[in-house]
Length: 88
Image 1 (cartoon, one colour):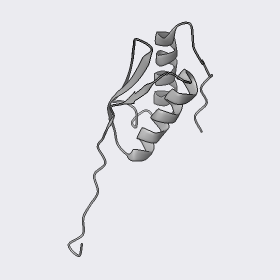
Image 2 (image 1 turned 120 degrees about the horizontal axis):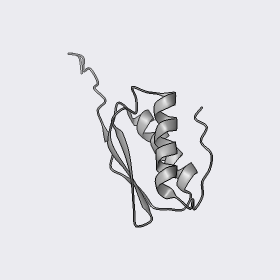
Image 3 (image 1 turned 45 degrees about the horizontal axis):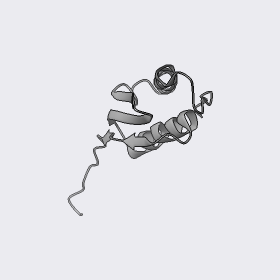
Image 4 (image 1 turned 180 degrees about the horizontal axis):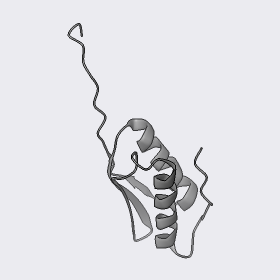
């Protein structure tokens, strides 16, 4: 489980974004190596790509826990590659 100190209405949202990104990358380095977090006008944007919808969900949950009621813009692309069998 990912543990991030809650920073609801943090006085420094940029530092909070850095802490969130560091926490995600230290927990799952390869999963979040292409994740970016941008703060602009009170909104938080998750950018870049992640390997699965699970990773996308983890990033969104982390952002909600850190930024509380701030608008979260999910601009993450999922790079999940599924194999299709010849029978499908």
